[in-house]
Length: 345
Image (cartoon, rainbow, N blue to C red; front, side, top):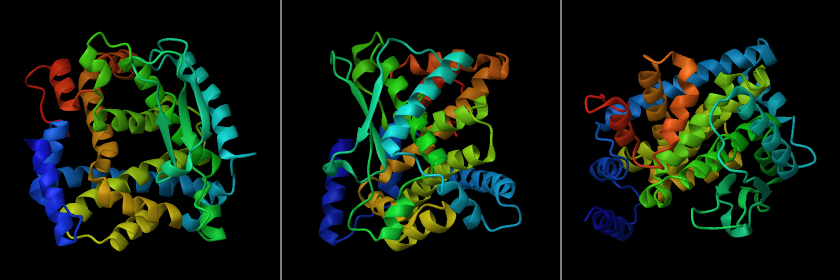
């Protein structure tokens, strides 16, 4: 019934020449798919507060890199450190270092002996900078591949150069997609006892975990220098831009051009990436789930570990959280904290 309503409303919108879902359907979407039953203004407020927190941290980190200079100067210095010899080769090196750190610090269990490969995205799958194509629960001998997209050859030379992330920005994309992000997450979900848990992984669970993993690695102490922190924060601000754009485009009359300005001026993304992300918001309104999922996981971690020693219980929390496979996070919250677990945000 819910899927039919989404489809029917989509057909109506197309007939009207618009892509916006409207507030009622948007709220029903996150309630039906992610079990998040909250007023949209509260959902939006949580995203805005996270963006403000990240922007404050970015300003502080940039003062260490380029004191008394505009943030644009700081970002230019960070992005000048391009991956060498290219993004794919650098990503392969990053995977090795990240896995060693996760094992050394005992951040989360790594089940199995599978490894993730890195490669260039095929031409038909370049609407986003990177993605993970994990082996499924019933596939044997099939590699998991971390794909990285080159810039669009139709862009200007300046746009193509800006699109190639600095090495520290790529680092946290690798964290998100591979270790301890999606690749590790699917190593766990592929081993869940329940067949349903193995084959169903929700959007907010998967992308929330990947985004959560980025900040987790910074918190755990991986390469604690300001340039690395800027790389983490630029990835975080990208998800802030998606979150606010999804709500704005589909419930507040925001235009694609206004969304693009959010990515450029508030999330500090490159011009080509800003175009890419604003247009994605028109056909993928649930892309707010990257941040929605992260916020729910962080709140659950804080609440669950409060009586278990805080950071000392992170590994136990991560292993427990991943053991469920990938259901809506509010259901995991109820399982881990009990029926009176409180709101997910």
